[in-house]
Image (cartoon, rainbow, N blue to C red; front, side, top):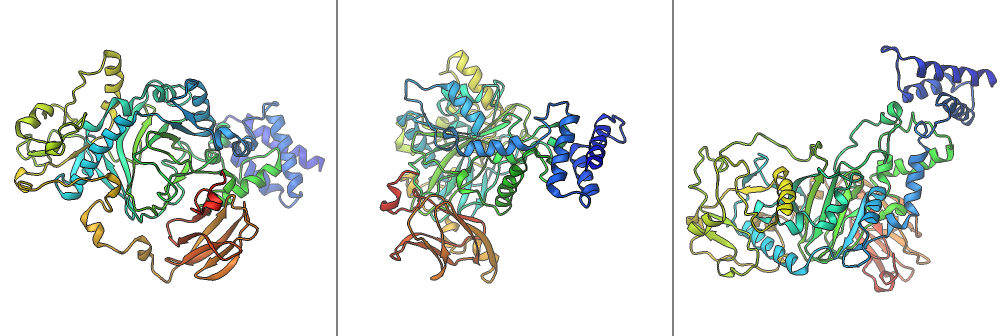
Length: 562
């Protein structure tokens, strides 16, 4: 035993002291080599203890960066931390503390802010957006065009009945993009820093009946999973590089399918489980559980959070936190404004950027003769007689198309003071906005744009209404799909899971079960009296179904707090 300990210590010390270009290897490679050499000579736990001792000696006592223990400890700390699991900040509270909000955002990668926006301002924005959507819906606004960054489209299909709709520059309002309290948090060096940039101003729409999403991050870890092995860095060691801002345009209930978050998921990046050394081996077993759940496209219930945002609220989340949008079971169009901010050097791979050309019309010339009719943002909503549109001379007064301006449309910043102008304009210069192809006036003469509440539109484009086939049909009715059913906190004495009316076993609070079924099958959870508590239709894209006290829609359950 002593000989084996000495051999391991000697090997690790020699490799760490060897700086030759050809022989320098990473910590991960050393760990794998040691385990391979000694796996038949020593019991697993003894080998891990010897490795821990050897690494402690090789690091001269500074073992914090060597072991992966702190990443699992970070996950476990998040689960019991109310800052991460329940805390919210109200901007109307005189005691609002931007410093504390910044600390919570840094620690948890998620921040819920209540009552950020003036209701009149947001209602006005929503009214203009409704006109814009009804314009797309009716054909008054073309669904073809480009962006200010050169992409040849500004609408993205994000799944069955899900859309990302980029907005024109006229929707860029300082109150929305550069709220003082929010910018104080985002511009802190611990989050994005004072030189942060805006990537885009858009919206995410989920039509009634939209499917739920799978768990995902908005970008991969900046570096390889070998980073911890080579540099001792991983998990939350690095600061944020990109943050998404979500602003709902309605009070979002669980019928609307609010965004769900897997707290602590950012701790699982930057290290290789097979190679990562642990001082406390029980933490390795804990890590295996969390990684197995992630591989199954599921979030452990103790890490699940899904804030219900109201009109006027805002949510910020880091690109490295796992999240997903829920299925929209309501009759409403779920509409959320989304803005992406980042550090100045970051290039978002979600956006395809091409060279910007002078021909903003996309027709091979620099004239604007085919730009006959377009949407104009009505800041006070007083010009209702033309439904928020302008034509001819009125249009020319508000929008000038400058051949030297790659952004396409100039913007009137005269209402802002100098300090506001500099900061706000700096954000606009980096962002991508929509430039829809203008519709010839002759195509819409004699028509009247009918508008209503944004929530009342059932489908974005007419062809959506003609389609009754969703994404699940494309997978084939005979295919069997695997998924996880989780019960966060519904603590009835006996909850039974049924698959197409056949009992599939009981599901206690805090437990989960692995299931498999065909697309379109019905899953039900019933109480001891046989009454339905929650039900779903199997969707191959959503690998985890969750029941909680706040998404059952049963008053005897949902009246309890989460």
